[in-house]
Image 1 (tube, rainbow, N blue to C red):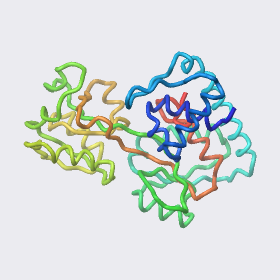
Image 2: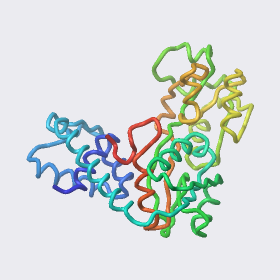
Image 3: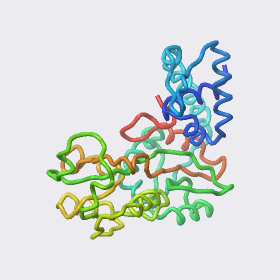
Image 4: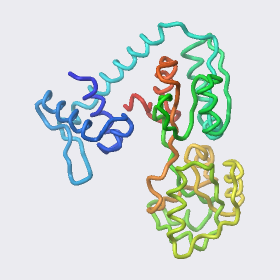
Length: 299
């Protein structure tokens, strides 16, 4: 049985889309479709029902899923063991953007230290373009950035951080109960606008610009902690990445409000390296996404 067919099956189920799985696997959508067709021939059954743009596991697909996940885990664990048998350097230099340093990196560094006890870890925090330059100059070994298109650099999708509207405790939008509301419901609101300069924010810009009466942006900040504190102090409401507000959401000081028009907008973080270098470290990092099901294994 072809491991690539099993990988496509697990990824499609996880992301709920052939196109999304193709993006994550860096292959074309027809290739993903061909792999599923090949798998279905091998199993002699359909694994997905396709209803328009939506897909669902068939009963046979649900039965096969845990075995496919286990096969993929064993394969990737074995691959990691083989790659990690080589010479491990004494120091690993990692670069990351500010948000990754603040909200992901402590967990990732502890994971690496557990996997490589003798390793010294050095972290550099900088904007995406600066990190790319440092990687090309070999001043760092790996980096977590927003997006890159460069033939000399290998990029691995690491995680997606959904951008949602957050309001303070007691805000009228927080009292409306669960469910989605319209972007028009914030037209009278004072808005704290955080922006990190990433292209991922362009979709949010377009949504706001499409409103007949855009919200009143009183505070424009480039720091997540500042934005959060302004909302908590009831200065306004703000669109924020989910990872940055985990503690506040648990404490109940910030409440997420789902906006139909902004659903699906997220910050995408990739792990990058110079092609073929530090494969063992890359594979180890791709095994985890803090607080979630491992991104690479997708179980």
